[in-house]
Length: 149
Image (cartoon, rainbow, N blue to C red; front, side, top):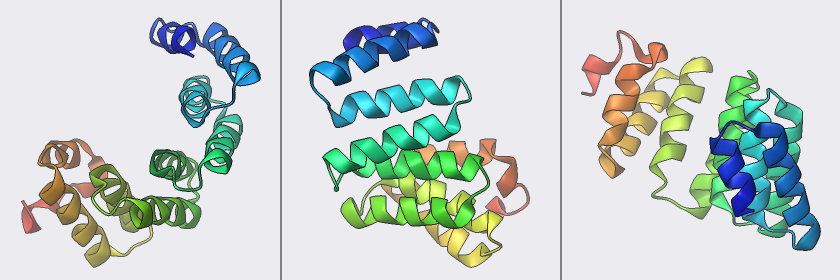
């Protein structure tokens, strides 16, 4: 698994996936599935990444990271309802998960639920102030941030 992780950051994605697959053959782990999913995302293999997140969740039904990352990817795939559900599940497991609140804020903006989006963004920032900067970097919030920042 560590070799796959290193290969990923060297941008040797196909080799990284091979290493993750070997690791998973030896001993399936939720972490290896999530790392493999990140790599699949880099290659644009979104469906394969979703499958990896689902495998991680099968190994640990309370793996908040897999739900949140699956939600992020579903957002990028424009499946906003499923993205919302995945991030909400992450928050039901870990109520102080700032990244999940941030992801929800962007999802709710896409769903046209402005007040819920701003509430989620406020929660993310209250938990971790770095999300103020993240919000400033996201075009989706242009013109809205003055209401909360």
